[in-house]
Length: 73
Image (cartoon, rainbow, N blue to C red):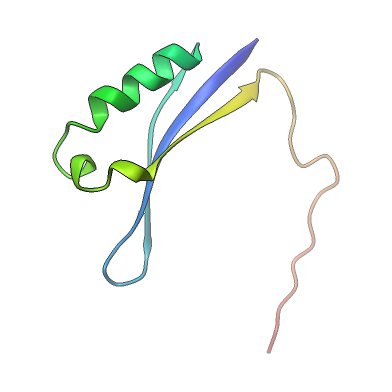
């Protein structure tokens, strides 16, 4: 079974990134419907290209190999 994560991301005037989770939906159609409704709302309508829909398999673990952090001076 898959779920669909809907998010909205925009870059603010100060260069910071503003990300909002809109919701997690049981179908791609429901996710698209959520975008269609949310894009009408204050703020979102000014940034209509910020929406993404990502498909995830339920119970599928991510980051199986861990991660490395590198610092540059």
